[in-house]
Length: 291
Image (cartoon, rainbow, N blue to C red; front, side, top):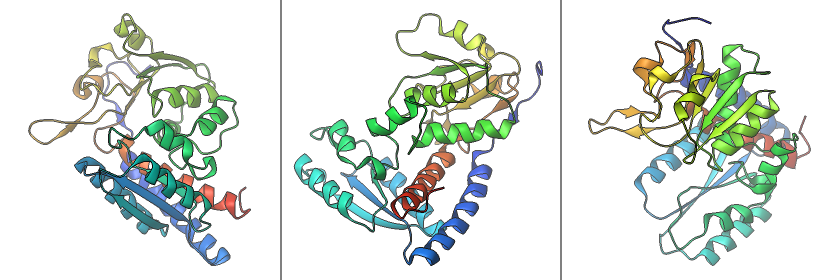
């Protein structure tokens, strides 16, 4: 236990840069070997400004490491049936190794129906029930990108996760639930807190590792953090002055934790990096190149 010392920063931007450099080398070798680059199809439905930014960042990241991206930008009035037809075509396209549908989709489209229509072998977001089930069965295939990125950040601490008390705040299918499965796989003791949890502070106070993924700005107060704990903040919120903050009170938590992720520059860069890693893994699997 470190006591009341300033936390070391888990720099997701730096780690992402190192991992992308390795992936770029991998992609170059695979492209030379197989005569084509890995391919990622990105589908965006509607005009959500944040989604446009995310998609642009993902396409830029693909270009950076040599992955070919296929962009499908559809109007907001696109029918669910039309979208399902496009996904069916991409499932059959041998040049496409990964399919990503940027969420949220317009209200008339059921996101669960869309996710389940994607070939699990091309589900590079790791959202398909098949891939979540594989993780639950301790046989991971394509893993949910944000939890996968959080695990890579935890590796950077050098801490053995076996037996560690881990508290996840948030139980979404995108982060909280697969994060719990990832930590179970790593041998941790896992508690998932959600909107019905009683005495959140007490759970946080005993945690060796806190993963904040509730999507509520400043929900976790810094003084709740156990001295020497590791804090992974998945939340991201824009303040009136334009700056970004997370679900955790960073200023106070960073004086108690041993390690903490900043917002921005922590989990965010890792999510896109693990999407790239999943696309490369899917490419290898499709071409019989998997380890």
